[in-house]
Amino acid sequence: MPVNTKNRILPSEITPPEVYFNRRLFMQAGLVAGAGLALPAAADAIPAAHRRLGELRPSPFSTDEAPNTFEEISTYNNFYEFGTGKSDPVRLSHRFNPRPWSVRVDGECDKGGDITLEDLLAPHPLEERIYRLRCVEAWSMVVPWVGFPLGDLLKRFEPNSRAKYVAFETVYRPEEMPGQRARIIDWPYVEGLRMDEAMHPLTILAVGIYGVELPNQNGAPLRLVVPWKYGFKSIKSIVRISFVEEEPPTSWSLSAPREYGFYANVNPEVDHPRWSQARERRIGAGFFAGRQPTLMFNGYAEDVASLYAGMDLQRQF
Ligand SMILES: Nc1nc2c(c(=O)[nH]1)N[C@H]1C(S)=C(S)[C@@H](COP(=O)(O)O)O[C@H]1N2
Ligand SMILES: [Mo]
Image 1 (tube, protein in one colour):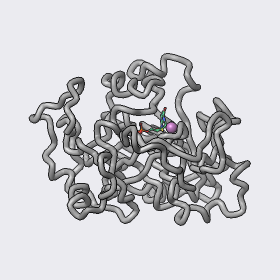
Image 2 (cartoon, helix red, strand yellow):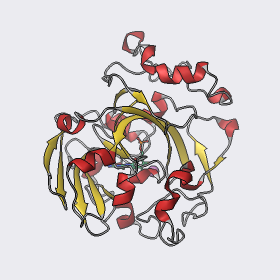
Image 3 (cartoon, rainbow, N blue to C red):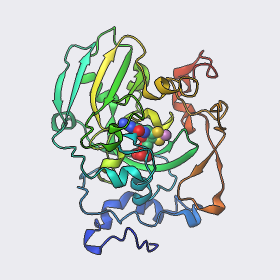
Image 4 (cartoon, helix red, strand yellow):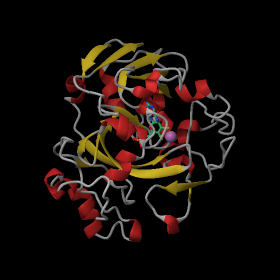
């Protein structure tokens, strides 16, 4: 592993490599061959402070692309609650304490209420899902998430027939989240999905990366991951899930409606008003890798294109 003198990790802090059995098996089988110099170097360099999440089932939905390193995934973040710089979240999220945690579930459902993180997780076996994350800023990463399908959770609350959308809200704790003490956006961060998007088997709630609990900067203790949409839909540190009848407001379309729509499906054919979305820079790929083409629905078109049949994706972006 390349020596990084700034963030050197002591051998005693390193999670045993068997945690990362999946990726190692991929590598042994040559399934990530071709990644060449871009092979993640520090997959097993996970500080011991991050608790392991036990047995994980591998998912058939995983991409076979080489994951970014733990360090890349946990030091290059968008989490404006901790500041707008990519390195702000890792530097400024130490005071954030995601435990204990509970989530309020309300709106158009028969079994809403407050649920603790433990009760929320208990019935759901955790999986590893290796997904591309495509940020609207035209960079991407490959992240080995740990999570379970959001739809499995939503069903437990028995949404009624008026539940057409699901709205999500991030925690508001300005004393622990320095970015919230500035008016960067209207806090709390809010997001939403149409019901069929929320129930889609590719949509997950993540509680970890690389087999350990989510670092604060990645949205501890619970965040959404919607792999065919731009990264901003994947709302972090969720405290509220509401079933609603009308399309809910979302933070980015509230602050710049011309630039960010509700759907935010990854689409190389619809440019951002200020830049192209046709290509993306893979974080950590190195200078020689160049930019790679962005795929329609981030490569998940076969699975999700039917959700948008008949919609004009140039207008409903
Ligand atoms: N609450 C909240 N969630 C958020 C954001 C944010 O600023 N606040 N940023 C979004 C954006 S723009 C991206 S690209 C992803 C980044 O996730 P990562 O830092 O785990 O890679 O989180 C999304 N979720
Ligand atoms: Mo993003």
